[in-house]
Length: 317
Image (cartoon, rainbow, N blue to C red; front, side, top):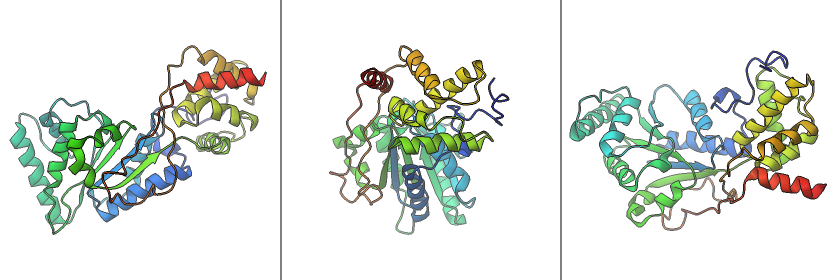
């Protein structure tokens, strides 16, 4: 609706993951570098977690665009599995292997044969599981058992888990201690850490679709950052709605009045947004050498980001 008015090639703040619009904040760049290095080093298990809407899925899609084609990579996004048999079906599908009509042992045998074949061809196999927090502990343990296929000659299978912060709650459970011990690298992807980064994010997205990078006034950046706690998906929601409001008034610039109106209108419709406090940068990229300590917890934000923003606006008045 507003794309032609603002001369956009496409909507700049769509909530659909689009690697072409990915803004590499320092955190996102570190996470991407970690994933690339983990694949290069053939680390057995790598874990990347982040708050809802932090850009994890978009990051994975950018990774898939960047990696070399001499790898075999399968991406599993459907993790609401009730059994290991169902999970194996999704894994085989991710690698374009036949899974229909096969029982558990046959599914396992098909995958093992594939791993051995690729190993002989010199084509490393990496399994990426998105939304891994949905996996039951028993399924995570089965994934660990798959890693037993790796031999002293090399890694037949590498596994990367991407998930929300509660994935750590699973990994800290006593029955998954052996799994935790095999995690080579882990990283937590937090929200934008400042209004300046939020402004860079907004300008990047506008420029990526051919728009005016100064469409949102600089004075709006802090308001948007505080209202969204720097979560990219929420920034997109606020900015997209602001563009609709701007188009309705035929405005050539989005100012604080428009953003404030968006926040007021969203106040009643936004559900409580769960998030996590970003961790310190130290040790974020270090190998996980002690499985009993590094599975750190992060406190949830129990208040709606929009609610906090409106309280601050009220106090300012």
